[in-house]
Image 1 (tube, helix red, strand yellow):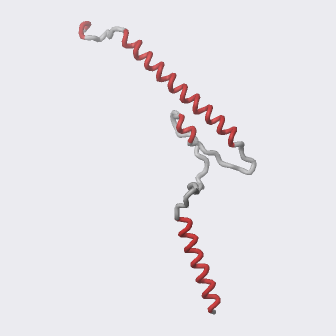
Image 2: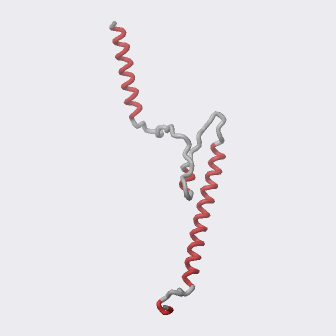
Length: 109
């Protein structure tokens, strides 16, 4: 009976210690991996930062991460370049629109 009590005490003490160690931040160890499935792109326009946050599920016959990283880097760069080009074109069209006289100005009313 005493042996059974000692075994139960050791198991309980081990469970408490395991729980305490699991909750503690350990220097040099990254954050725990979550169990969330793949995170895709958000709905709507895709900002370059969202591309870096995409995560893929891994499988037994998974993908080559460096290949996916290259594709993702290229996609982020292209999106960034397109955003810059769109902003430049919008600024140019706004400037061009400002060159034409406004037909509804006070002098024509």
